[in-house]
Length: 71
Image (cartoon, rainbow, N blue to C red; front, side):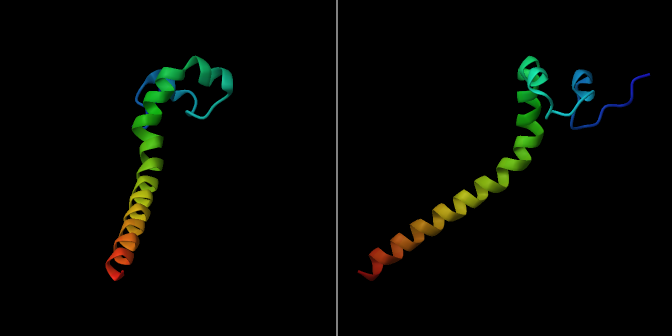
């Protein structure tokens, strides 16, 4: 019997090895790796960085705005 799949890798083909594997496997499984990366790993990694970029962008805009107001 197959072991139950983890929620991170719902497809039975992806359950054998993690998404970070050798270059040949990554090249062969490129579409499914992209799908899994978009929904699990990339989502977790990208959201904090996007929030940080937005915060930095707002801080720069506020600083420029206040400099204009002072002058």
